[in-house]
Length: 74
Image (tube, rainbow, N blue to C red; front, side):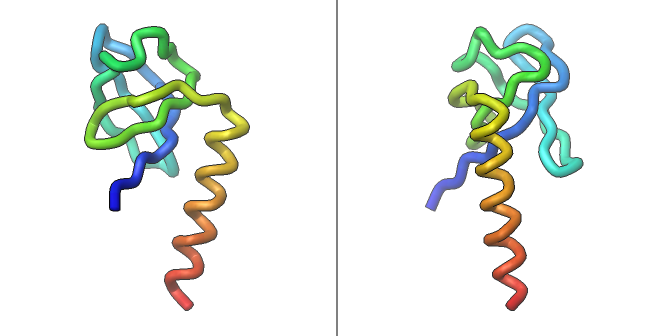
């Protein structure tokens, strides 16, 4: 199973960018999302931003992932 995670773009350096989610930062490629800017949320998989999404959708997805993670402890 593949999983793509919403992450917030905090810095853009040409085709590369620094993204953050849950306190974790990662450098990724932004070549597939050339319009992504700082403050945007992107779906990240295998080191690439695949799509820009709105903040509401990103927050809903991150909340669902937290719920799943919390349920794994039970």
